[in-house]
Image 1 (cartoon, rainbow, N blue to C red):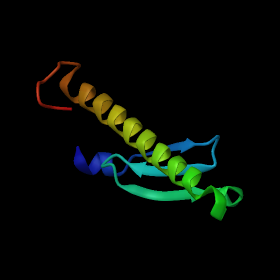
Image 2 (image 1 turned 120 degrees about the vertical axis):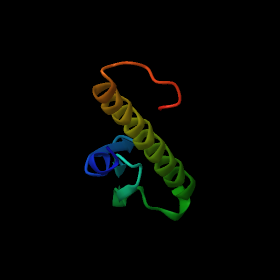
Image 3 (image 1 turned 90 degrees about the vertical axis):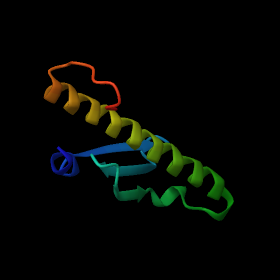
Length: 83
């Protein structure tokens, strides 16, 4: 299952798409895209917040994807300790 999850990707964004993250099912960041208009010395804190929000959203989506894959494998049975 780990290899299968590594081959799946999710995308998450923040700030209305100003920052986008692509992550695989193993929760490894594949790419980060930042809209050039958001890059400004005066707004560095906002950019940092947008990146953090996008990464957190990507992790949440990745966890949801893993949960769905586990449901397929276990037939929907809940197995304590797995996700």
